[in-house]
Image 1 (spheres, rainbow, N blue to C red):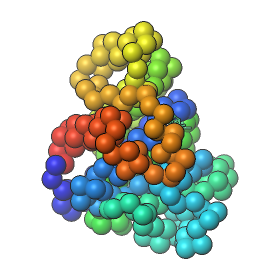
Image 2 (spheres, protein in one colour):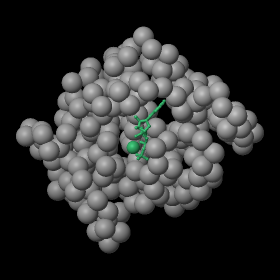
Image 3 (cartoon, rainbow, N blue to C red):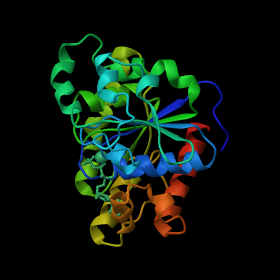
Length: 262
Ligand SMILES: Nc1ncnc2c1ncn2[C@@H]1O[C@H](COP(=O)(O)OP(=O)(O)OP(=O)(O)O)[C@@H](O)[C@H]1O
Ligand SMILES: [Mg+2]
């Protein structure tokens, strides 16, 4: 992997299916690239604020925060003003808080509502090698803003229902890219919560059939370590660095970097 010089690539995690491991994967990838010496910026664009929590930044506890992603959406603060360092090497974050839910109600009436995140991030693109964006489990305005701010997006699939929702997501991304003339490109689909059940074997086969060019070889296995890591507000690869689960994420990070040309 080589660092991207100049302008950061942005990588979104998208799937309207809840619990597909978007946030776990966003935190894991941010930590891995950060450890490798990349300058990584995580963006939490979900009112659940789980990426912020997973990276150890709790809005209710942090007195040092000068704002959140809500302020960026509302144009009340710049990206630089609301960025914080996390305790993980190379990883900064624009955190979310629960008040983001209220912002979504007002967003449709605001000018350039689908491009607010992309435009807000533009001034700090040159400060990072990679921007990783986490989405909420729906296809509302925040999911659209993440897609539109992403040069590439990846889709975690945790089972048959997760796979079912991919087509709608792709159509949404393509329609927006066409309307706004954006580069948004599907980088790939990857299996999470992988196990040896017949259900997951079926998901694997269907994903191979439907996304032959896009399915990543790396698969993230099901492991209780994911929940343990989340409870301790630490990304998986740093919580259990020698585990098979961390190895899965490192292998995925390599594949992603190769496809992105990092
Ligand atoms: N590989 C895994 N094995 C087992 N459990 C996992 C794995 N990855 C994530 N989990 C757990 O599954 C739950 C959902 O994961 P996560 O929050 O990352 O999904 P999400 O797609 O971000 O959810 P949401 O749609 O609500 O934002 C969490 O409790 C997480 O700890
Ligand atoms: Mg999440």
